[in-house]
Structures are given as C-alpha cells and as structure tokens.
Image (tube, rainbow, N blue to C red):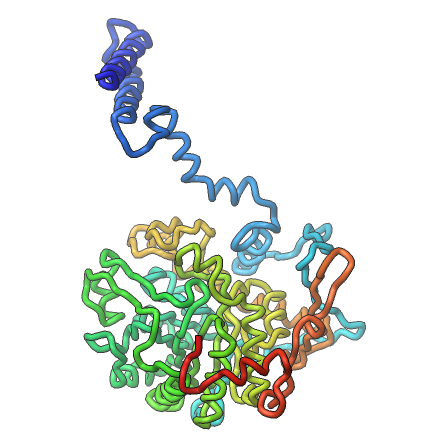
Length: 527
C-alpha cells in the first residue's frame, strides 16, 4: 500500500507540475505532455522489480543504462589514445581507412608510441637497402601430391562466412579480390552465389558442420563436395579444425537468421537453429586427419588442400607430423589462426584465455614442420590481426609464407569497430542479414576499397623489406625482428626463440622438444 501511495503521489506531482507549467486554462497543451509522461515513467520504475537502480532512482536511473549502452562509442571516440585502443587502435584503423580510400597514409612529427616499453617490436633496417620490386612476389601452393597448384598473393581475405557477413559485404570482398588478383576465403558457412558472382579466386573452407557439402544427418557428402570443388573459381580447399576466436567449441546460428537463402547455401532446414559441433566426424586420430586431407585433394581434382587451426597442444601437432611421415602424404598448406580472436563472436573466456597467440602458434608450427623435415612441402598462412605492412613482414619473419586479413578487410568495406557483429544490428551493413541495414553498404564503392587496401598493404610490406635489404620474403631471417624486454634490453627473435634445423626431430630432438616428440602418437590425440 505504501508503494502504491508513492506512485499515486508521483502522478499527482506530475500533473500539478504540468498545470503549473502551462497555466490552469491550458493544462491540456503540448507543454504538459512530457511532464505527464515522466510521471508515468516514474510510476512504472517504482512498480517494476527487475532493476534495483530504477526502483531507488525512478526516471534518473535510466541515465545509467543510456551511458552504459553508448560506453564503447565514448571510449573509442573520446577517451582512448591513438595507439592503445583494442582490438584495433585508432592509428591502425586510420591507416587502413586511408589506404582503402587511396588517400595519404603518412604521419608527421614522429611516433606516439613508447619505444622503451617492454614488448615494443621493431624491424632492423639495412645500411644497404634494396630497390623495391616492381611486382609483388607470389607463393606457390601445392606439394608433390598436388596436380593443380595455385600461386597465392602475399595478403588475402581471411575466412568470413555468408550469414555472418551480409551479401553485400561478401560481394564487395570478392569483387576486390577479383580486381586485385588475390584469394578470398569463404569461411565455413558454405559456397554462396555472392562468393561466385564477382569471379574472385576462392579458398573454400569446410568446417565441422560441412555446410554446403553435408548429408541431411550432418555428415560429409563427398559427391556434393566434389561437384562444388570443381568450380573454376575454387582454387584451394581448407578444412577448419579450429579458429582463434573460439578454439575447441562449435558455433550456433539462431533459427531466426536461417532464412531460405542461407538454408540453401548451408544445406540446412529453414528457420531452425544450426549447430556446428566442436569436433569433426570424418576423423578421430592424426592419421585419419592426414588421410582425409588426401581424400579431399583427390575429390577436388588435385587442387591444393590444407587445414586451419588455432594451435593448442604441441604434442598433438607433432602427432600430426608423425602421421604425415607415416602416411607419406602432407597437406599443401596450413593456416595458423591466432588465439587473439577474430571476426567470430565467442564467449569472453574463450576469446581472452583459450588458444595460442599467433606469434607463438606460428613459430610452433613452423619449427615442428622444419624439425620433421616437412617444411619444404607445406606452405604456412598466418591469420590474425594483419592490417599493415609491418604486421605482414613480422609474420613472414616468424615463419609464414603469406598472410590473411579479416577485420582489416571489414574496415575496408565500412566497418567502424562498433562490435555489434553478433546482434544483427551492424550500423554499416557489414555483419547483418537485415536488408535495410545491409543496403547501406554500396558494393560498387566498397569493392575497389578492398583492392586498394590489399595493394597498398603489400606495397608497404615490400618497401619495408627493401629497407631491410631484402627483396624476396624467403630471405627474411629471425634476427631482423627485435623485441624490447625491459627499458634497457632488447633481443632479436633469433635469440628469443629456439629455431630447429631441418630434420632435427628425426635425428636428435633438442631437450625442449624431446619429451613432446616421444609422446606424440600418430594414432591418437593425446591430452
């Protein structure tokens, strides 16, 4: 009764205030309406039981929720400095936007970064720089078992699915890839008409859901796979074991998002929630994985075939290497995804605390393949926060042969890092299936931006390498990248990490690798 009395009193006070504001003869005027509505809002706040703040502070408490809602925008535009924002800072976003637009991407007055901060990294320039190559080199993908090798660009579009991204975003990305002559990874969401229509080269990614090549029960369908893999635009096929954003768990596409178009692309029922399991049905041991990769290559007509993973157990990785040696066959490429996370929405604990970061993951895979005597047969792709030429050169130094970029390409087509990707309310039409929002992304304007970003980023990487005295990425060495350890000490990557010699694991494993190599079993994934 006491609370009801308070509510009534609030309404009366509101009415009295309204009357006083406009005069007794004009109490029905428009000026009184806002005050009456505030009185009703206050009454509703007092009666509701969900939010304690609103019960104790009716009307005024809504300011707290408003500020909380716009906190990311306030942080990004008014609080964070140019170089310390996350996931991508203002400086990186600016250089990507400028390169995508074809405008100046230079900065006066020196760096704003603290070059004596532990963790700061820098490339080593040469006293005898080289001329910048007139045309960027390409990476031949295709081992001894591959009959249709592909020449990969140094930077390509990383895996992003139709369904996660809008149709217009996919069209723009593939249009840019077609114009620039680089590859576009489809992501695990299937091979859609939007991937095929512009004519760009494709890396068709197959995940645990086998979308686009699955049976009604969710198993792998070899007939449908072979039919689609034969498409002229599909240049490589990739089996996704895990991704950096959420290694070890599958994905969920809510039924509300599964419209007729997405259902057709993914071979799933319309309107029903789609689950991607955390594990594959086609293999359960390292040996079975290697055999399935070989089967995919055969079904695709000899096209380059590989897998993508976020590195976890080194023992399991070495078990796969032993399986390759035992079976006498290897994948043509491996894409290493960083545990830093990416475009896929994921539980915070997984994004923050599960999976090996890209630097250590890339070094682990590179050294494992070198030590097992397999590195010359397999090309390594690096996927994780590559947005600038510096990022690309660092990954090449760390063992990669080429790089893939996802979020930087999203910036090129209009992303503003609103971080609303999983809500279907993307403000720029990139990560939404809402036709009204997706309409904002103009493909004719954004496709050239993707091309310009890739071209300018690769050109920047070549310019950096030339300043280091290198024209061929294969000539980059670990001593050319250095990291500050403390304000008084810096070390090169050659000193910081152990680099195995070709075949060293087969002859005499070093102490740091011996135990893992011994335990690694090609017939089971040890935990």
